[in-house]
Image 1 (tube, rainbow, N blue to C red):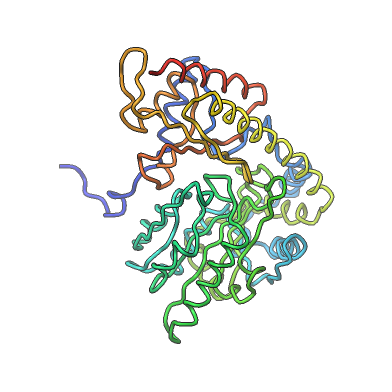
Image 2: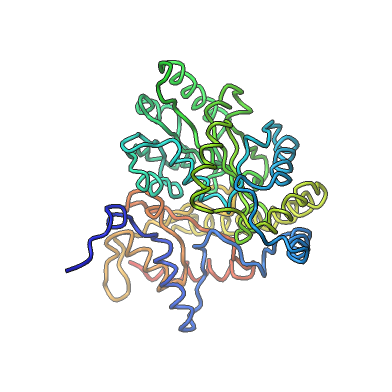
Length: 420
């Protein structure tokens, strides 16, 4: 008889990206050339962390900063984060309103645990990163908004409005993972007005409606794109907004594991109490190094200038390649790159037949065709909660070599030209 585990363990859905990654690694092991655009990570050989940060981390270890950090994050780091937020975003948060952890994930989890009871409604748009899993982990009630290309795959106030009554949490992410798009000032302002109006309606003692604002990629915007946040637009949103941020993406430091949340002190305190039992602290040496690095304005500006240019160049070249394929009559599309390390592409080959007469009957078959015939590995939006029939994909350039781009476009063109 199979061992019966907890309901959570028995019902938790595994990551489709991890599963796809296993297939890719096996193909690479066999010597196949794979253009792997699946991982939301960086190849350090292409995108190393800032040299100043690396030196500071090494120095911190040599000074033997290897003991436990403060549970809420070291004071010097929280002071640096506070100053960084004031300088870069004009946001004023003191050290009691800031919580440090080993990246964004434990902070998001502890926020859910702080706010969401069993059966509480959690509103999130799809595609989006892991909101479905965090809601499931906390036994929340899923309220799923299907975002569309017409709105850059971002939720609107009109789409959220029918569901805000009795909801506990709205999950927003801008710039967005997986789409690489941003929420407009107009749309974010309308959502803020909706939240403020709903909270004004609720009686004293009733649980309020909060916003999780994941802005992990906010420093990686391109061209004329501007990042907006709820509190700068509406100061009254300060009472209801909890931000998630980190060095992970802006400084290609995904493995360094230093992130922070900031928001109302009471909520931050409860999140800290939960995390104290989990022990998901950022390492002491990395905290010490980050505390100093965040004060080095010139080094940060120089790094971000180079980094943004390199990422943007890759996104733009792939975007232009897809536009060319579209003009040539292939069933593809692409959104203009706005931010982050992601490009939203559409490959709509369902119903096409391969040279051996096999029909691509669904989007899963299309994804397999792309991997097997074009060597192109991208993540379907269905892995981010969208419908399994969605022909849209996330393409990540964190491990992309510039010389691979024209070759990848050529192989994709060749593979699609053989379909009938």
